Image (cartoon, rainbow, N blue to C red; front, side, top):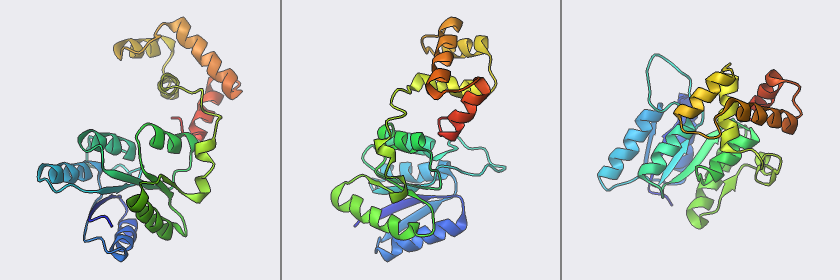
Length: 222
């Protein structure tokens, strides 16, 4: 079984439940943090001391408060951790059920498990931890078993995601073009961007930009 685990979760009640679940698996060292920045610093410190964490369990969404942080979401935390410790095992424990978001965590960020919070999620989390430790198997909550076989989003590219994000912020064509130019994203001409938007509207059967953004949000694209 894993010897050293860190939990990143901003709600005390969930932290306590997860820690208790880990203790029942006889994991000797369990640490937790309420902020992504603090979790990252714990992992970085453990790496520097040659006593790394073997498993990270993290939520995706964190409620904003008075404190400013560099890392504000589970995705940002996972990406930062993977850069300094690529082999760490990662389980996402979240209420999020959007197909694209879940699928991208496996395919883009290389997580090992995704357990959806719910009435019976703690036993499922425990089973996931055991399976990942024993067999390196990728684990997904039963409610989301369809996600990895969902072919409907295969044609959506990173470029489209960035475009949809900027549209959702209310940027017009010229502003999106400038953003893409500054970020060295191509194509970045207004006519090319407009064609891409129209293609997305056809793909999602959206009536207009507002409808397109609403559908993208429903799918967890933005």
